Image (cartoon, rainbow, N blue to C red; front, side, top):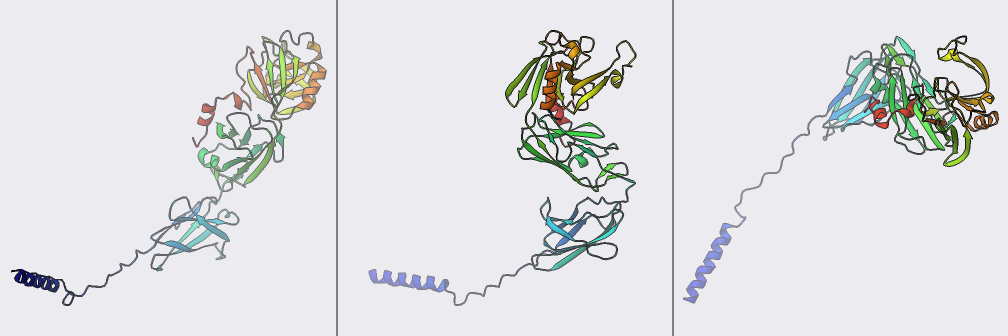
Length: 390
């Protein structure tokens, strides 16, 4: 019985081995490789486009492939020097000319690409840049190379109402050696300012790159050129003029360096409350009531020479010498809105001051300052809301 079982088992093993042998198995077919999808090239500006802004990006987008060559030629067939870099979206490249494209000129963009099998593809676009009705360059403050105080905002003034605030604002780039949270805010269609949430950090280098060449500013009016303005934020000078205590405190950085009796605006002509930014210094100046609408020969009018005048606003407010009110300084407010000091103190403050310094007027019976630079009276959330890019 044991022998029989052994034979049966051996036969089963032989049978099993025969069924799984490879001797008679069919041949396996070789794998096949599908052809790669052809590369597809799209160009911006599109072929036949007219009135193209010279500053508009020249973009090459490729699907199922990669860019191998980009050339741009002008109307005479001459190649325009430029460089290609990665675009903002996947699969896109941006060609940037070494010098800006000209106005009213026809260009031809040719881009070559290859797919995964190195099969070529090509696209061509011929476009024409806009011929502007007029060109403009905005005014900018501070000036290049200037040193200003911690309260001076960057101000950009346009001659024409800006048609696309976001397009213009996106081309105004501010960098600083001490980073800030600064933002742009539009006060009108022709004026935009930049400031941080708090006063600038002292001893900071700031650069504005206004890349407005080829950007439409107004209807038919285009940016004439790019501008770069670099300036320095100097020492921190923030003074406090308290109309209730008739006292002015002068700070150099965090250090209180002077405490003086002073006289602010009278009840009939109160000084405005809020942070005032120094914009101008005059050793000698004639105070003229007609500059803010009060005729000199009217009951409230005046025309008075003063010394050591530090302008605080375009509302006629100054810190200046007022020897005629020394008896009232420290006791009552008798000025037409200015901060009155003795001659010696006014001279010291004049020598200490620089454009962009801050004088915060407090506890006056007037409202809050409205002026060409009343930026620091605007709450930060309102300021940010004034950006076209918010």
